[in-house]
Image 1 (cartoon, one colour):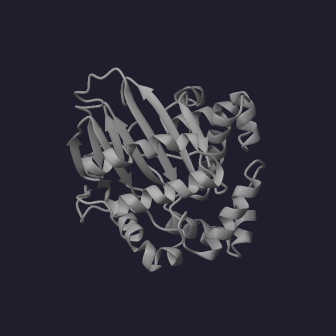
Image 2 (tube, rainbow, N blue to C red):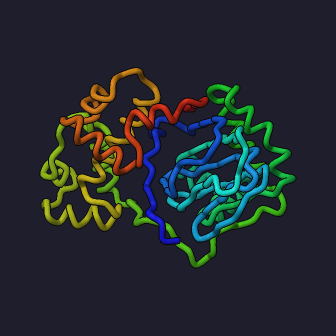
Length: 291
């Protein structure tokens, strides 16, 4: 599986609990990718399509529900599917939506185990998927706290369901270096606050209380990306959200998100997301909700 893997920058912000995206389409077109967030994907009416999760490849049936862990490579491809009305509902939620201490409570042990196994990808049984399908489809009709409670209830019921199957091999790892340092947390809080204006390596190194050269090595080791790439990812995340949520022009969004050159913004956006900002905006033509 020597394909290029795109790191997706989702439009989910730290103020959201989860994002729901529902659409009907004729083909799967998104490349092999990964992202920080967990993803619950319900696929209807796509027999013959191919699913890749980690190092596992499989042709799917007409109904499936898969839970993808943080930074796990995954994608669906049209393959032999001839359906004209593929229905896909995707739920993405932060990997820290449920706090580790909270998950250690006895009543949540099944969810904790499920989320651990999701790091290799989980395919739920046809029986469990059939039973839970209408509740997942109904999530887009709920609002506010009720939708959060319903998502937690769905996760709990899935965690206690029978015959779920872990997909990727145990030796396969897709984890990136974790940014678990308080210094890194302070840096990313700063970047998320001031992303719309010019930010230099010098000022961020000062936030981390480190020399510039040392900080450059430090952030690369902790996050797997350079300072500039980390800053661009944050800016692209905010730009993605604005492309979905607003009617601002692409140029307006670029400048509001800290890119002082529209050509540079378009180039970076296409390199990271494999599509132009306009194409990205059009791809979100289905129902989308941020809770």
